[in-house]
Image 1 (cartoon, rainbow over the protein chains, first blue to last red):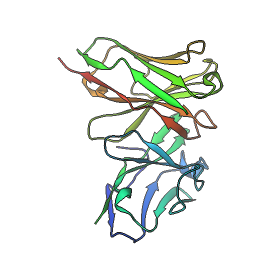
Image 2 (image 1 turned 180 degrees about the vertical axis):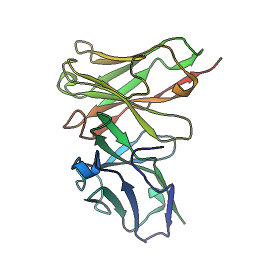
Image 3 (image 1 turned 135 degrees about the vertical axis):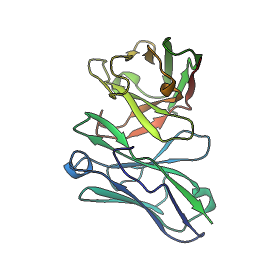
Image 4 (image 1 turned 180 degrees about the horizontal axis):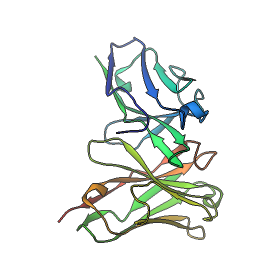
Amino acid sequence: QSVLTQPPSVSGAPGQRVTISCTGSSSNIGAGYDVHWYQQLPRTAPKLLIYGNNNRPSGIPDRFSGSKSGTSASLAITGLQTADEADYYCQSYDSSLSGRVFGGGTKLTVL
Amino acid sequence: QVQLVESGGGVVQPGRSLRLSCAASGFTFRNFGIHWVRQAPGKGLEWVAVISDDGSNKYYADSVKGRFTISRDNSKNTLFLQMNSLRTEDTAVYYCAKDDYDLLTGPSDYWGQGTLVTVSS
């Protein structure tokens, strides 16, 4: 069981908007630690998508955005494309575990 | 461009040891912390360990503490993971990942392609 909780799957039609939640606790997200998001396309390594809650690395389109509030964070994807089909992971730091923690991952299906 | 290339994976029996390597290029290796993150078949990501830029600080996940040792050779731009007393549950693809701006609370901005470790009798 992951320290950060994500829905196992989400889906949407091309062009639509979806959100993926990441729920933590007072020892990680709720303690103020940043949340980061990764995209993992099938059979590839993870790729940084959002860092510091709501910042996009160079080259990441503005269709991807992040937010954080309290003990939770969210990743929003607008204008869904078939190329967005992937697994998405949130990551933060947990002070009780003294280490990085990941969410269990969410599989995005573009219908 | 930044490149991280893992090697050393393979099939090993429970209780045996294995050493992974990660060769880095395209950035000033000695200035950045580096992580090991693993992914069991069909499962999610699990953080394993991190080492600071100069090797003076090391942190481990509870699941590997006391069995795995992370180290680095800055003269050769290479990261290592010595894995002892391997268990079947250590079977996974092991990624090395470059730290971006904070050793523990920040993200990893570049990842290697991974190396598969299979622990089986």
